[in-house]
Length: 449
Image (cartoon, rainbow, N blue to C red; front, side, top):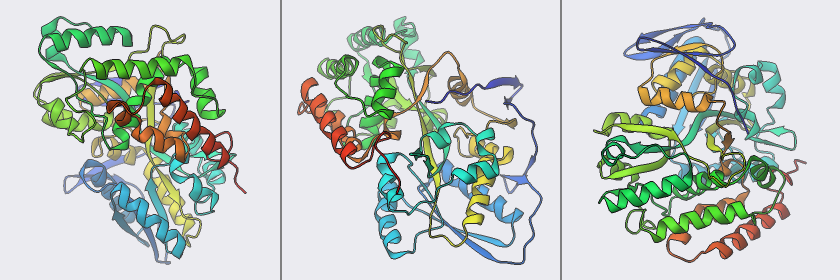
């Protein structure tokens, strides 16, 4: 779990994120790009740093390129060779690269234990615990950055891209129907009935073959019903999924499926963005990675609200957050010090925080002061991430072992096609949990030799 306080000061069009420090750098613009004004570090030794990431297109890829450009200007002895791969391609080629001893120095990848745990056990990723101390990262970046990519005292990554799942609504539809913002998931269910009866589509969510569409959605509903103690029991202490709150969450999803609140045939791959942008759908349960697209493409008013907890949840439910990716250092790299220096430049820096926010459209983990111009929806995301009245808790995909990750990757689709019900959901989740414990791929069982 992570919860960090953020203060917001809005002056004209400029939003200043105020944390516990002071702004120690300024940015200039070159060729329309934000380039930090940072003193160059001269060195006679030429170094090549290879990076693989998953920013194949869009704003995050541009942010990474701008940061690399700025880093090379500040460190003229370093040449950064970046290769962007989609998630599945990177996963496939990375394994071969590790086995051949020809892996990139830096990998920007999903950092949950189920995704990289076996690589960590095999010794492919460097332990960064001492590097955090050396660079003072724990003083300057959000705690999720090391709490998620770590177990058994081993820290294998530096997280970035702070993301949060929320309830995105077509405010025009809600206003037309006279609907208030639901205070609980039970109230949201009542609103869904009104929306459907009024002839509108309800949820622009599919439960298809894409794992994020299953896991992000299921995790959000689970956290609406589960208390913090129950979440921590499952995620950190290898606790059972056979809980009344989990059963209620599964029943909720089944109820929404039965009542037709999802698109027709939600198990079939669909374009959630286009569904929501059409203006026919009232609700979309998604994350702030969509804010840029909504700002650019939606021709109606969109509002973002915390996903409501259940009235039956003793502590009101939790907001699902993620570290969208993490920098991981190959243990066989011959330029580890340069890799650490690049990570520090990319995430522990007010100027690159500005790039991640303005160019990348994401929330950087940097907690010191920096100035950044944000859209109204992005400002809202910052408010939600910094709202101390909300319980901001890392999503299930950040914690799950491989077998459990595979189960939850398909669970929504299997609920949609009725190959799972409440009892079989619990049974299969339990079977996957026990498999992960047996292989040492849970937070509670993970051991690094």
